[in-house]
Length: 433
Image (cartoon, rainbow, N blue to C red):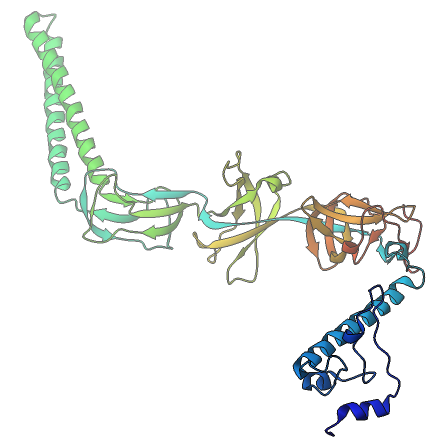
């Protein structure tokens, strides 16, 4: 750069003009700023390479500040002019709402297909008649156990035995007392008959005859007392034998040799009377209406692939007010795999009903419930509330709300609104019913 920058700038632009601002009063002549160059880069202004022709007494820093301010005002004026030209020229563009186009939708008519209605539930395997077996007599020590859990027993079969070393002598003694009482009774009866035979001859007084009659009656009563005492002792002795009350299968065994058993304690055994097994479960309140006694059922066990056939034996008479569930019992055929206490899952076929089936994309839901969009005869969208009863590989099963002949928006229904006009795609177009 040369030392005399003003001379160089004047030689390049010999006829500079002072800058005037629109809408403002002209500045005094001594304060006019003369552009020495049409355009200067910001770097040149910042470095002080642009000079002004103001008051010679101004310092270089003041000149640079004025040039910076002037450049900023010019830039603002240019930007305002450009914006005014852009915004003010031409007619305004059309509103966004006026550009709306009618959506093109694909519809589907739900197919009515036979659906197998099935009620499923869970529960456990249990004995139909679970009989606890304990002792009924005096406490005693168990001296033998004759059965194990899982054994089949018959009515009257010995299952366990208590110590009877005290009761056996008592029974023997009372049996002897009974024999003695019977002999005495027979003697008294014979004497009374003889006295009665000589009564007409007057050999014995009436008083003596009455004494012999009373002795015979007393001895006969003694026989009955002895017999009753013997029967009691024999019953107590019999109760030392724990026997099966019915035919069945032993479910549990808690009796151990040496254990002291007492009435009212824990059962020594649990018996499945008759070996009958069933499943006990609970069914939802809304499903009980479709169930009936003797309906065919299938029961599945964990780890067993093959289901077990059964029938509904009993339906609960009440609904639990807390869980809203009712009881159900499924009678099953005896099988070694059906162990009481096992977890099971049951299902009952309640019937075959034709139901409309829709693709999953056609069924929507919100806080008001589940619904679909129907295209009516005017090609407008209508909201239709539906009830979903389940799903299959073909789609969603509609239990209520549709007749099966409507034209349903198949996809992207979430982008439509009720009452909106649509155009049905040609491959699915038709006169909606």
